[in-house]
Image 1 (cartoon, one colour):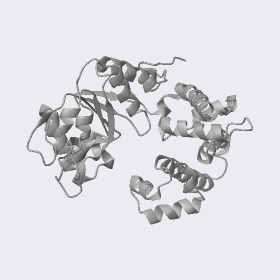
Image 2 (cartoon, one colour; image 1 turned 90 degrees about the vertical axis):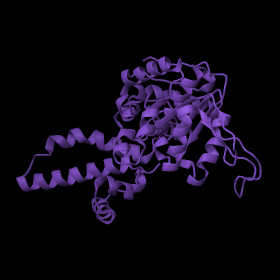
Image 3 (cartoon, rainbow, N blue to C red; image 1 turned 45 degrees about the vertical axis):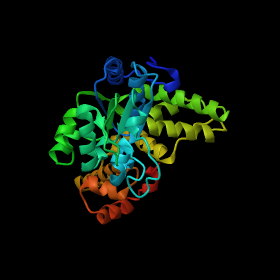
Image 4 (cartoon, rainbow, N blue to C red; image 1 turned 180 degrees about the vertical axis):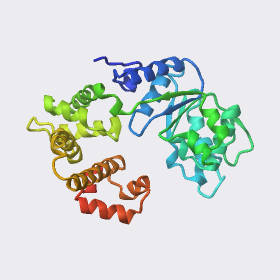
Length: 335
């Protein structure tokens, strides 16, 4: 196993040896030396902010601010104020002048997480700034120039959103100058145990507890689970394991234990799945397919039946009935 720590340890530590992940790290190191706008693509929990910090701390801007902002949390009425600041009295609650995130991150790096969630107004405001580096605080008549790097991140397919008319094509081209794509944890099987051990050690130090050791069966469970929440889900699971592992046994969340048990039982079930009449086998196969599909669907949506119904393109009521009939508890998939 190989551990990669490509930047200032005070900013965090990146661990990984999977080829796709090492390729992303290599590209990070290469792009850090320029000031080009970068788009980081990856599922939720894959470490997009960690990569953005790595870009910053490997660059000539390392001594300046790194400012992350979640675009999904920006109210549409306050987007320009949050990004560019405002003057005193610019609007009802503007009791005093305030710098925006662009001003705060001047000479440093501004990370725009979930950039796909920006409203049309927010997209237009961001595009104007990216075109010439000039911005005007709300209520001001003067333009200011900001010298900073913009790193955008998304877990969505921006090209698809452009085609659907939900994201500006010109803004997409501004952001998509250079991309870094992070693979999901299920494609980094060899990294899972290494990451788990690092998280166990960190949380044991944090809480002054003894981390439960990883047995061979624990390692198999960790590798067999799909980790829909990626590294963040693994981190949370190991935090829980440290807090509950006073007896020296690794305790995983029930939804993970259930998924691992189902995976372990699959080979034995396969040996007898075709025993019986055509009608019996067809009935068992259909029931088994429905259960596997629903468990996967609930795992992907963290037990949210409404979101699961949208992904399955069916009515929530119908999906809920099917889940109850098969006997699956959606709460087991929530975290």
